[in-house]
Every structure is written in structure tokens, then in C-alpha cells.
Length: 313
Image 1 (cartoon, rainbow, N blue to C red):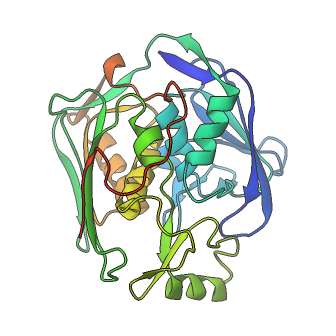
Image 2 (tube, helix red, strand yellow):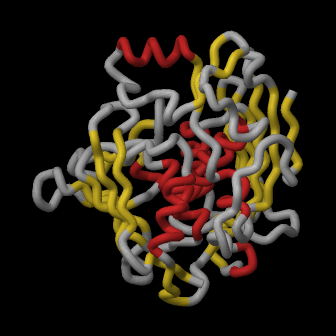
Image 3 (tube, rainbow, N blue to C red):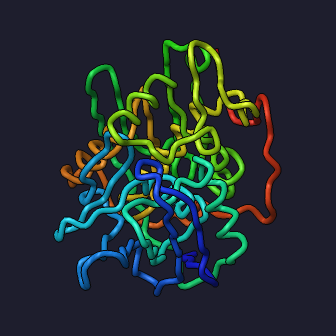
């Protein structure tokens, strides 16, 4: 089914890079409206920014969208992932600043806000983008690919990371994203970085809103957050979360398999551009069985090994 929010969900926090307070209001929208951001602090008539892959202007530190007026909104990936994971097809997102609030660095607060606001059905199942043949992007040892479905409804994700810091190391995960899997398996996993990188970004005037309250920070084999990790493989799960959010910029759910190897925002966006540049690689269809949705009730966070096939070395 096609869903929007029953009531407005309000999220207040700080921008990850600006460090400034920002409020995001996610409002109900008419069926077919899609996901649209609106900067109310921009000049009249210039603040509307559709959530589309072809409007991505920067992927260096986050996913940033920019419209024809030069108005942008950054760090959209976690909110986009939560919208996709909740099965929300249509929403208007009103912002009073240039970034989506980082919240706790995951998508969990957004999922909780949507649960509280409630969802309403606005129509039949939305169209999906069915992958018909493999599409791949490879660059500097990184790889992202979309493959035809292997019998699993909806989107399946396989992700592999390999970091020199032993606090992260090599991790991989494979998940079929139908139903409440996003909310139960990925939503609580936080963004992460190395201490030296955080210090460097701050010298450049970036990551001013970053802290141990909204990111996992590692340094020479240690996790610096006093509370530790939420899951043993939280790092690769967050990368899968990011992929869900970046793929949501396709404008419709994807029926197929996403594979990421050391990939990130840039690779996923390049992959979508390659996909839509090849009309023989995809087609529009319907796949209600593979739709993502909120769980019937809030799922408790689990620590340690999970039911999904995952490996942390």
C-alpha cells in the first residue's frame, strides 16, 4: 500500500556539520507527491527540493541535495532511510536550516517519531523499479552494483567493509529488507568515524555538531563511546542503512539486490545514475510483498550477534 503520515512528526536537533539548531517537520502529503524537502529559511519560492538522485550535488561527507535555485539540504540519508524503512511514499519535510538534524546519528529517532505520528493508507502499492540486468560501478577499490532479484521480494542488501583500524576491521552483512527488517535490524546503527578524521574536519570548520552523542568514534583499535557499540557489527549495518537512504532517492522502491564493497554515498549515487542511463536495465512494476514497513510494535535493541547473516572479524 501507499502510506503517508497520519500526523506531523517533529524532530529537533543540530546539524552535523554546522552545529546549529535545526527543526525538521515531516508532514502528511497527498498520494503521488513523493518525498519533498522545503527550506522555509530560503527566499520565497526557492526552497522546494525534491528528493531525487539527480539533484545530489555533494557526497563527500553526507548526501546533499540542491535545486535549480542553488538552495540545498544536507545529511538527508538517515531520514530518507527511515522514510523508506517505514514504507512512507509521500511526505513534505519542512526545515528551518540547511541540514537535517543528526539526532543520535542513526535512523532510530525518525522511526520512533513515525510510529508516534502513525501512518495512513493513501492508495494502492506504489510502483517499484525492477532491476532487469546487472549494473555496476567500480572506482578506486570500491564497488556498488544492482542485480536482478534472486527470488526475494523487494530490496536485498549485501554490504562488505574492510578498515585498517581493528576496532572496525572486516565486516559483512546480507539482509532482505521486506517488512519491518529495516526498523528492527538497521535503524539503531549510528554513523562512525576515526578520531583523527573528526579533528581534521573540525579544523576545516566542519563536523561542528558531531559528538559521542551522535556518532561512534574509534581510535587505534578502541571505541571511544563510553556506552560502546549497540551491535557487534554496527559499522557495516550503518553502511547498509546509508545505502537504503541513498537508494530511496531513486523515487520508488527497488526490486533487486544491492551489493556494496567499501562503498558509500558517492558510489550509490553513481550507481543510480548508471542505472537510469540504461533503459534496458530496469522497468517499472509492482511488488507489494517486498514493501518495507514499521514493526507492529517497537522492537527492543539487541546487542551481539543477530539473526541476520553477518560476520565481524
